[in-house]
Amino acid sequence: MKIGLNTYSFRKELLKNKYSLQDIWTIAEKIGYNEGIELFDGHIPGWPDGNLDKGIKQVIEQIDSYRWKLFGLGPHFKLYQRPKGVEKETIEIKKWIDLASDNGVPDVRAQLGGPFNFEKNLLKHVQRVVDLLDKVIPYAEERSVKIVIETHHQLSSYPPFLEEITEHYKNSPALGINYDWGNFPNNEDRYKTLKIAIRPYNHAHNHVKIFNFGENFQETEYDTIRIVDAFEKKGFKDFFSIEFEGTQDSIEGVYKSVHALRYAITGGKHEIDYEFDWKSLK
Image 1 (cartoon, one colour):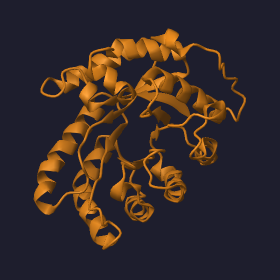
Image 2 (cartoon, rainbow, N blue to C red; image 1 turned 120 degrees about the horizontal axis):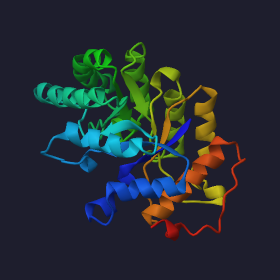
Image 3 (cartoon, rainbow, N blue to C red; image 1 turned 60 degrees about the vertical axis):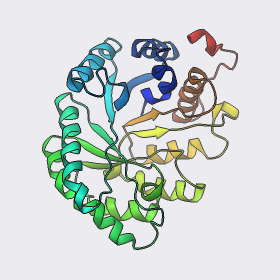
């Protein structure tokens, strides 16, 4: 299990040009324990109309000096498409598969969406996603890239859907679950989905969201340690990717998230310095 950082954690600062990507690498290095980077599409140098392949290579060159891995790309293609949208979306997905494969990036994150009354006619909705995935999964397998379904509300955070879709492709190495710890309407769905996401054939990088930092910086609304332990028991070797979205200062949130993860991963053996001035990292 490894700790990684999603550049989305600093989206506000990047949008306002308050920080550069190089600033973020420096901050992450100072915090420590980071082993990799997940790159949000809007943060690729040259986005949106430039040479994205060149931009990704630029980021890889930058983080290579820290011995970090670029383990994920975060585009915004959607797997739930009505028939008339399948062909166009297939082209878009294959573009991102190529960008990942050409640069040795193992995971490409996918959104899902779908209707708000997704509980009705579930198998119909599953089939709509299958109709698209059947056109791209063989290509992803060929290019050794994993499409990872982020639990991003609606269908993708609905356990019965994830059960159906991942069982359908359980023999393919090209589909996984990007288990986002925060994107659930309640703890019941969060933990039901956890049982699906920890299955080895569904392993992919997680999105770690801690909003309310309690004792040892653990989330107060759900059990951080329970999630880490569940993955560990199933031999999880991938990244816990910090995607901070709380109300705290971004550096504070990332700093506390890193140490919360270290505490959980080490079974409580990580000593947290509560007196550390995270503002000094700016």
